Image (cartoon, rainbow, N blue to C red; front, side, top):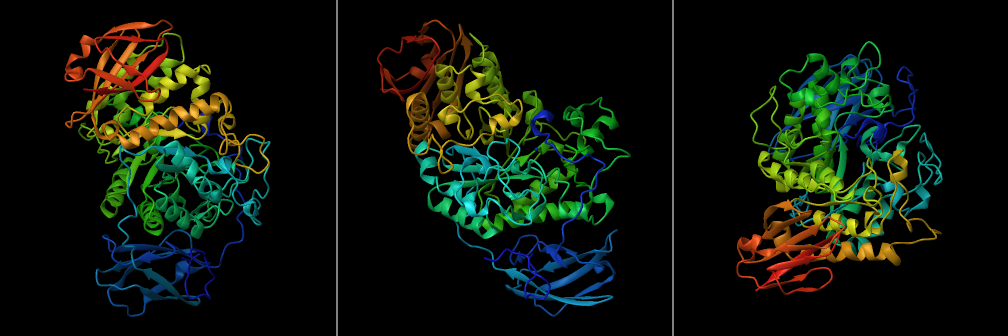
Length: 629
């Protein structure tokens, strides 16, 4: 599959919501206009398309000097017709609207542009992939491993330096430089993911980020249709997804709807000024999503949240412009059909235009109903988080989310709050789950302990190994699809001050690393890996933990207990003593779940729990107990 952009003479024309401190990166002042690189003399987005899509309409954005003065015609092609062209503010762009009927066949569309000069192009229509194993989606049976490609493993040193990119060197001793990790490095360690018990891989964005500084994180896109060459090629990414599926692993693609990088080709040469939000002077977002559904909110606060820039180098895309909205929708349909990926994680989900979010979600779900969709909604309350997923609320200001699930920050915050202090408060975790009544289906949420914008979990809990195990036990036995941040399983640590400290290289990902956790894991790092692996693999083979019902009991005396159970009579008890003292727990309190069971076995240690009437739980200990009859 050839994804590369070619010049017109060819037959085929191809060519982040965290706290603001966690995403800001060194860059140009807002008023500085970056210089454009030399561009191909013509480009069409999308680079190709398919017959048989449910939506027959296709918007082509044609870029070529002076093309805006042209008209476009299509040589006779059964099932396809030009529905018109649209001129935009810039003379270097022309929008061509096609209708691809259900009877259209794969082939080459012969487009002719007639103006000051005559140009002819062949635009490819492809057959859709009919493999039923593509785009599998996610379920509670999955366990997502999140990683930063640049910091995980360098599998192909030949792409460390790519001529023509704005950052064409690596420096592993710099937290803002590129370190050389790539797609091949991820693929080299499929066996590691499987040993751990992970079933899905979520890399931070792999698309081109050709920014002059801190381009490694991926959230400042400069080309929506191209894998960053320092990670690999589009063709290599297609093969990566295919290889992952062959190894029983799914792939989640991290995407950004709200903003692009300031070196994006459509920002350097804008189709129109109205493609991006702008103010009389540089204006940031107020980073406060409460303005979207506050019945007393000012219009100013609402506008600042949605239209303000995320950072000086991240221009805010105007999704209220129908051409921009269609460009984005088509791009993310294109990636699914091109690769067969299984899910999208949507960065800074609440920051996008609410009406666009509804249109985008509807278009994606209609074309790919199995595709998993979950968004980053870094909010402070259960209700505010639920507002951005499918929920029980009526529409607010014309917005009702159609996003199936969100990253579960409430679970994350609650676990951290419970464990980071002595005798931490367990009520927040209880309340976070109690808030599930707000969702249409809370099991589609993604609970987690930490990520690339947050302090690492092991440091948050004071490097207390027992607390680490308690957090892991909760993560892997609660409802939802759990996500683990790379290195958490081997006790990588640090606080996000600055964020580069929690984005360090995975030990063993580079030739010559003194420590190689891919090969051997000794000491407490080995114990941590084994604990996660044992529990994750048990979860894979015991559906009661992934599809069973959940019943929780109000925390008492520093002990929190819940059960996963099903109609087949299987039941797992999770009981955690979150205090410094051993606790004697009266098991008769759980009679409705203990009925029919006489004993249990702790899943990780194998220890037998012979007396369910009185449970002796050691200090700072979590048990995952399979109940036995």
